[in-house]
Image (cartoon, rainbow over all chains, first blue to last red; front, side, top):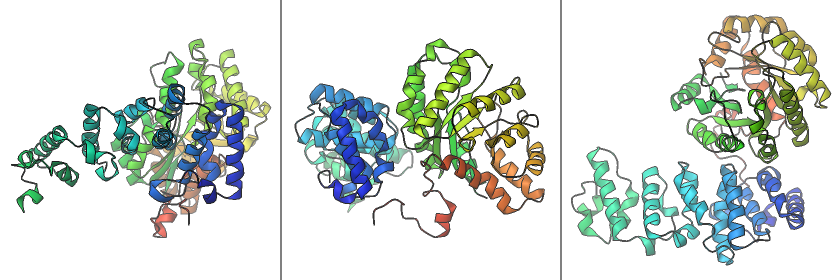
Length: 213
Length: 283
């Protein structure tokens, strides 16, 4: 989506993007003014794979920053910390793209951890991208998956479950289900695939329709 | 009745208020940056506050079907604390953001030299960022403070239609109406302005360039006062169009000058068309 973003913009949008990139090349500090303006200048329409125009334009701008590693991580954190929700989502979306290019290492993890501490489900979901899933330590990854289930963030959007969903995460899900059952509340169906490989943990959970069949 | 509250401090209100506001017809609002009762002591707490106005608060409002926008500024009371002068350096970054539809609240509290300096600096920022300005008028010595405000605004280079002068009353309404600026009235349970005085002022000055707000905050205030004014207007013989103009079209016209209002999601017109598809999506 990032390399082809220009084809989705109007002529004015392309001109603005090119000028914004030139400003960043002249002075990286220009990012503070152009990054927030992307939606107003280029639009906010939906693209494929959950991207939006403003988000793809913002990530395109970030990729032009002449920084790597720790200094890049610090600048991204600053943009994230003082960004509105759209800007924060764009920074989170950029992490996997930077990582694919080998530019970020662990330096984006403080952003992922901050997003997971919020109560905004959009940020929580975006934090569990390929980058977060690959880089979070096991304890933090499990807590994040549980928080997703707890706050209603669909696990279909959470990366890394095939390789990282272990027995301890299954135990946490089973305990969560018991707690919900005891309270007479609905158990989110998202937890059952995680319990799939651990039938002993599933035993006794009355809302496990799959186990009962 | 669709309502746009052009001045309300939702950070101080509960989700029950959001629900009651939605039920009363409120679909959009502007939350201007102001003081919080307890004085702050460092620019860092302002950054956190501004981030909340742009992050958590619009998210909370959206859960209840209300479009949240904000105005950003260093308020006049805290402008007098030299430790907070650094807040002015934060402003350009925040004034660049989506959903920041004005500079505000700026203005006078006690009309000190520090307040003068901070007000003028922020009027210059508004000019630079092409944003309208929400100007607070002082609680004490209001008439003198309002006249001085109008002079300073005139000298700023901003056209009067980009200025909303707020918290007006019988003593200050005429001067602001004559200036070409927009007039704001904060309808409170006991103080600033009440519903019946508001109706009398609307009869006297008409509905052009008039905005009514609840200015509800952490003090004794009521987020449903906008609706109360709408009901009282109808009871007094104003038409539905008059009510819609004061409670919806006027605030949309004033803040719309920022080019940053996002009302498609909540606009009753969109509901009427049965169109639930998100706007702004590429064809």
